[in-house]
Length: 314
Image 1: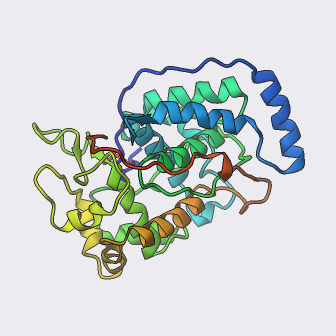
Image 2 (image 1 turned 180 degrees about the vertical axis):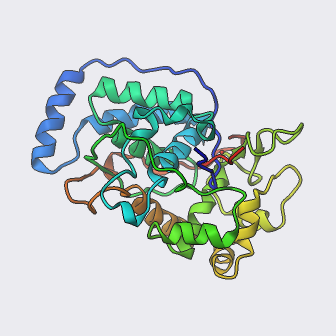
């Protein structure tokens, strides 16, 4: 299987450490009651506290946060409109052991953590992957809150082949791939910006390039990625797919529109990401809005070298 990685967010092999769970049974009871009333189950507020402790280091999003962002792209991204309410954000990244595939190398640690967290709190793995991804985005200083729902069905059916972008593919083919997912040029350009908090580990493994960031401030969610993709400073590695899309006749116009425009980018990214997180769902039918369980935005404290979403095909 050759699933590629355009939005390259390589994770660390951090050890899995789990919090103490003191009152899971009562949380689970409240979860059932909340679902019946349509409100967000209280269990997600407790999960959010655990994820903040996991994802935030010295006021910046850490490698575990980057891994969680990469994980939600990998689980949700292998989908197109032809599949309808199948696949997408279904937990198959973990439940079908897709983390064992080469393209998911580096996600094993965060996958184990999220699976155990879901088991301890008795929530779905698919929901946990999505919630953790949204949580990690807003944990990164400058990151937006993405409208986030729970209530998905888990699946152990592997994702179809060929529905994730290839870092070496042509810009036209990548653009079409995203159109087939219901995402337009502006959506694609906005989602690429997640490389703002990205480092590559498997695209170029030559000396000096392992861990190279895709912009000069990988610990902060900002728009430096957009200007530095076309004029990279020393130490910043530009992926072939990013360079091609930045120069694409259609996508490139949207790409340039985000240069030095964080407000525009964050709004568009949050919208596109929210729709990606509903891939495989029937809109919001049967889902519960848990956006308010996410933390508030994080303010940047100091620059910090961090880590990368989709990984390139070898």
